[in-house]
Length: 277
Image 1 (tube, rainbow, N blue to C red):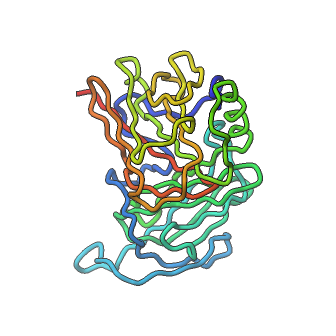
Image 2 (spheres, rainbow, N blue to C red):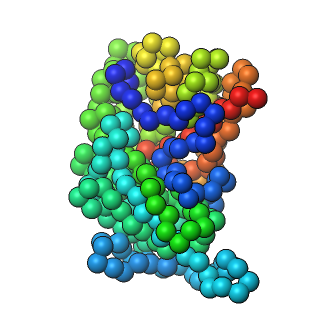
């Protein structure tokens, strides 16, 4: 699973994280995994419909309840290019759907403000599916949300790049987990150690070494260009079944969304932030 020569969009050191699913209107807390209070959208823009129970408190003691519509773009995880026609749903309520247009733009909602949702992007012929957590802010229209999918070509390249190290054969109907360090400059001060619980089977995970070469069974983030650890052949799990932790010699590391599910033929992205004291 060679990664050399590729670039993922990583945040500047010690900045507010801007990983997939973030936006200027999002809150900083991890999203809830319970079913958000939502109302389906039925419009000429291609946004699908769906509904959930009407609950939640009003945004003020006197005003009407605010509902949030989320808009943004679906992009390629490596190339940051738009992905057209992606099918989007909500993990806890798959009846709430939207379809990205031919420019990768989407609109979906509505959601209760100051909550969170797990966005699920269905597999395409060209791209794997994805599970992306999104913080729901308080403004009626939340824009500039980025959802991301990894291409099947990149997955094929990764498989070929590890063949000489005798990995477990990749089972493409199962899930992939990517743990990404947002503060990539932290690597200059020491390795970030990533642990998964339950522990993965030997031969089913890797990370690039300091020069970018993929090393099978390595769980150290050492390469600042693409600071990730990748797990493959992952079983389907519910939120909380998999625990990810990260440690750094001098920095405090936090997994921003610690309870995410995995689904076959989908990538689940765990973002890690390691801030300087």
